Length: 494
View 1 (cartoon, rainbow, N blue to C red):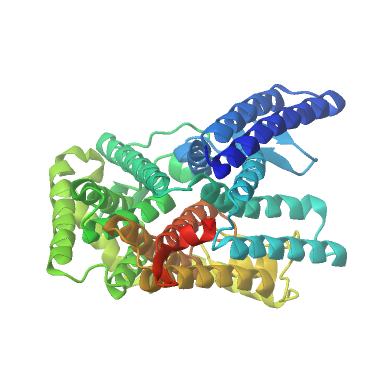
View 2: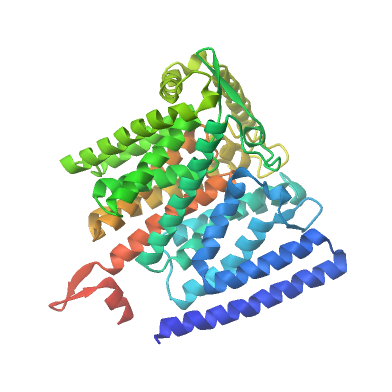
């Protein structure tokens, strides 16, 4: 057994000891400050998940991704087992697992003597968040009761370290992508079911009207069921990766082609206009990077679009909720509305919110914004302005720097290290396109990088794929030293 394997095993044993210590701390806290059934359940579930993560780290990543979607929008974290830390701060199951997983993840990285290529950027971003919070706390902009809950959501960036610690081989990277695609398939299958039945599958536990009740859109005099996808950001990431791998001719061309059609179907049925723009942005990035340049690539893309049309035509009789409006008509109508947004009521509502937030930002300290204080105005319908109000130029600049640095590393991997297989190149191309698309969403209407836990986790998945693609490509890049060829991985071991 190699020294690295022995080191990882020793760190896993240490992690299991840590699990017992954490459990002892939780039990001790419960004895001192009161014991609830919810706290007990949180402790039990956390210890089980920690044990699984210590033995099968990638499974822990899958659990975090699924929890970030609020269990596909059926159960909001408020209804999950949690621990009340202070009167205003509560750790839900995702927070508890992320905190525990992060300790084991850093131990695994240390055992492998590895620091992720994007690790410094993510760690610096987290440091800036804590710096903004600390300065704001000292200057009176915020207090523990107001600031800690906001800081808690940003701690989700630690998911990146959990992911890269678990994905230490190209095979595990493929498993990660497969899980993303499986989640995408499930979410779209739920959409099709809801359309065919004419009503939402609701649990009453999502705390969102879009998932707890039937919401209809008026289209050409008819009422069309408005079914947001239950994992929109994961759907976007999965679609970009499947499209890129399909055009590269790998990942089992049939499966990646099917995944592309399913992803496009999910967005077509969702009828969310801004996401059509972000899809166009991602597609333009793929074109610019040469993902679709050969005749074969164009043929594969044409087959995907043609397959989408055939699928929509095939399921049209099933969509009883459309009120006589075909899916193609509804889709075309929503596309057309993009070019006349100034005539849409929602446009004026969002503009009014942005104006209010911009005035609030100008009235703040600018550098720190309101520093996670009580004056922070957050809207899910606006983008980067939320970050400016919440953490000012300093925090927002750190987010944009991380995105820019990650894109540069991705481009470097494409041009310098040149991933050896079409599959790895497809992953990298798709992740770069997805990151640019998420950036366009952040700059316009979606609070992807600074408030939405699902958005931050999806961003970490993209960053993790870029990081692992860069690392694996660099490790297998061949260089000449002293007249002999070596891979970077061999040189590091020497």
